[in-house]
Length: 246
Image (cartoon, rainbow, N blue to C red; front, side):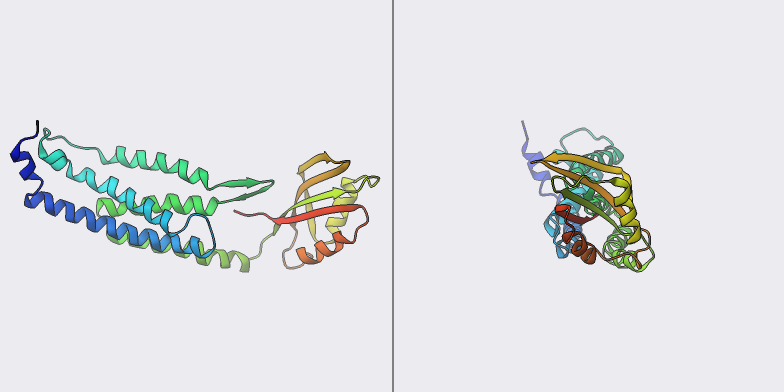
C-alpha cells in the first residue's frame, strides 16, 4: 500500500525538476521531428510531420526516463541501475516494423525506402536528445533534412542512368519477340533488363513487364516521346511506363 510519504515524493523538488527536464527534452524532440517530417510532407508522402514528431518524441521519452531510475514509482522501489542500451535496442527493433510498413513494392518499382530510412534516423535523433547530446541531435536532424531535400537535386545533376518499369500488352496475332524488342530499345538509348522479364496472359492478350535502363540519361529518348511512339505501334494494345522509385 502506498504511504503518504511516497505521495509526497511526487511533489518533491527533485521529482518536479526531473519532470520539467523530461518535458523540455520531449518538446525539443517534437520540434526536431516536425522539422524532419516537413520535407516528407512537402513531397506528399504518407508519413509527414505528425509521424516524425511522434516517433522522435516517443524515442526521446523512452530514452531519457531511464536516467531517472531512482525516482521511478515515487522512489518506493529499491535503488537499481537501469540499462539504457537495452532500451535503445528495443527502440531500434520496434521502429523496424514501422519502417517496413512504409516500403511498398509495385512491380519492379520500390517506394518508401527514403521515408523508412529517415524515420529510422529520427529515432537516432530522439536517442541523442534523450541522453543529452543536444548539439549532435540538432546537427543530425539538419543533416537528415538536407540529405532528403538537396541530395535529390544533386542526383539529377550528376551523370546517371534513368530506369523505368515497362508493361506492354500485345494484340492477338502480334507475337512479341524479345530480341527485336531489345534491339529497338537499344536504338533509342535503352537496355532491356532481360532478367526482370515477367510474362503473363490475360483476356487473350500477352502481357510483358520488364525493366529498362537508359545507357546515357542525356542522350536517351525521353519517356514522353517513347510513349508516343509505342502508342502508334499496331501490335501494342496498351502499355505503361513507370519510373523506378525509392
